[in-house]
Image (cartoon, rainbow, N blue to C red; front, side):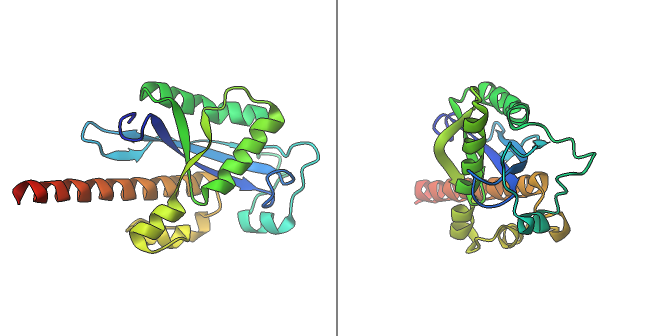
Length: 206
């Protein structure tokens, strides 16, 4: 993995939030999925870790955002953790995966990655978390990758164009969107690898 992505470990991240402004709106859910690789260089999604997140003090929540996500912030069984605890929970397996693959840092993979990274970095800054394994600004954006590979930029359409399943009723859950984004990312990376190997084989045969 360290050789494949220049010392970075791709980790898919999805956040569900109370709006679009990472400085004002609450982070409500976060899920992470380290990408694994086999001896043949084929990548696959790893295990997903997630947490519900309690809104930080003074956070704003747009009711329209909750209509989209279906999150009930006041549900007694939501089990939301304060931002710092939630980050520690999802960062721990990421750091373990970074060490296991002999990588330097994790790099966030997201669909519209700037959005997820913005909320992640804002939560890290607010909670003064000292063990953030993610690169502060580098990302892999599956919007761009899917646009190149399949001509689609909306996650649902890109997933379906890649030949993968999409269940609309499960969308806008951090866990589900992370799982589908990870599958999409791995499909694109593996297809690129197959095409590259085919091209090299053709060149050698010529």
